Length: 274
Image (cartoon, rainbow, N blue to C red):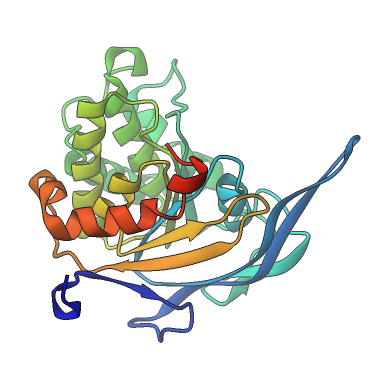
């Protein structure tokens, strides 16, 4: 393919930011201490993320993707290095971060609306202001009219959309997502990809999204970060120049196939990625 026709580029972490830089990761590493000895999870990672950017992270199982997310969320402490969000070093869970896990983790005894409002209650924020935001988010996520339903009355995709609303209700600067659609069937997963793209477009939140699916990463992200085997580090970064909004039909186009093929090349020989 001629260079002019390429719709993606491999870039270095030194490329200047297009907008305000939100996240700075410098020399970040993590080693877990166990009775059997030290288990290195992350070797030094350096990465910058701009405000409003959608970053997808792919890598072989056990390479430290989830560890990286926990470090960003302040849930665990690094062995070396640091994370700065909006200029502040992360030493405990910041108030300006929302997290979505693979399972929605909704409380069965709370209605959908009350589940979404949980971060407001935990943080002691103004209820009236955030209640209006909760209703707006539920409408954006296609959940208007389900506010009084309980989790068991909702499909898996609807529960995961509610989890995204819960993560956004306190208006965080950063949304961290750890394989949020991994447990969904293929059709629901595709629908959720479209929904997340729409939510990102309407809220302009900075998102770091971990996935085992290379096509999913390319479909959603502005940049795809490829991690090496454990102890994981940044092996390559791909800038995805596909126009937005993206349709599912785009996955069949040559430019989409080219970038997924090149990313898959990092793992195919060792068969390490699903």
